[in-house]
Amino acid sequence: MKRILLFTLTLLLALAFIMPNRVHAAAKPSPTPVKHFHTVIGSVSADSITVQEPKATKTYKIDKYTRITYEGKTSTAADLKTGMRVSVSASTDPTVAEVITASEPPKDHPVAPATKATPAKKKGS
Image (cartoon, rainbow, N blue to C red):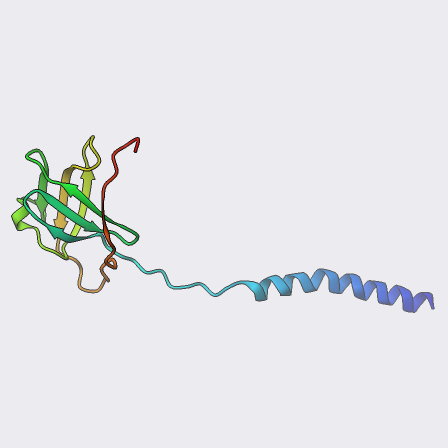
């Protein structure tokens, strides 16, 4: 009787250590593929640029102090086109673009989905 009880307890202890590992291993979700999006120009005019990001769309003012480059060369807002890949650095006023750097988007990467444009927020707002 003691042998059966000892065997049963040993078996239960062994299962207690083995089973939780199998449950956790089965519960891991399969990794989802990561989608990479580029920030692109949604629209542009002489005095503003709307930028589409993966989770938001922002509009910045362009003033006479805004530095614009396209493919590494000094440019103007007229040289920028919808769909170009873009990076915008805000000035001390976060609604005004200080530097806009644009390039052609790569052909093999998706563009950020369009969302409703919202003006960039001022600090402290």
